[in-house]
Length: 266
Image 1 (cartoon, rainbow, N blue to C red):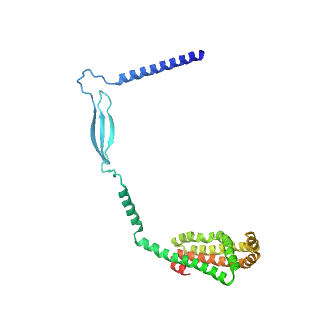
Image 2: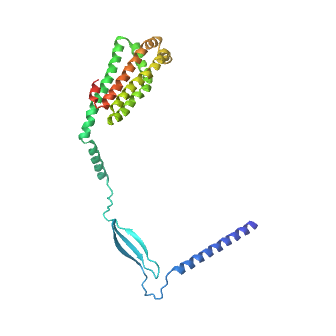
């Protein structure tokens, strides 16, 4: 009962506070509202005026009250600004096709791209076909064990070649900047540094693969014959990768100096 009495008292106090606030709002609104003695007296309204500005025309709504300051609200005219109508599906498809045609149409830039893309494509195809022919010859004349050893050593040793090949890949970016700046001496230094760095990076891996390739082949489930063949062939593969890295550095150099056709024939 005491809690209910306390709650009722709180509700009464809150209602009293709300009534006081409503009374204050009514008094403020009545003090600031204009009074008119005659019912026929015209109530002042906002008068629109137009002004010209350098950026276009704007509308001004002027509030003409009794003795009060004029309040102007700017309404900017849109002028020449037009809102495009919503596109239907057919118009959207037409605009999309038109945009694609501007990209795919044959022009000077397309011709320049094709002049580079076609030789590179044929070079990649010939390289892949050469690898397949090499595997077929080894399998035909040396046996499947030799083919397995050749393929696995190429894959495993290629891990280290990809790691050290970053030195050669950097030549394309740095060499292009040096050639664009006409600093040909710096470009030559980049080529030499890439070749030497690649060879020096391959030498430690050659000893690592020479001591571990046989064990790796056995751990992968191949027989003793394949492990012995891989052990005999690993140094040949490392030497081949060294020559391939140097060749790639030279080819990147030829591409930088705009001799890419000669590079693809090589």
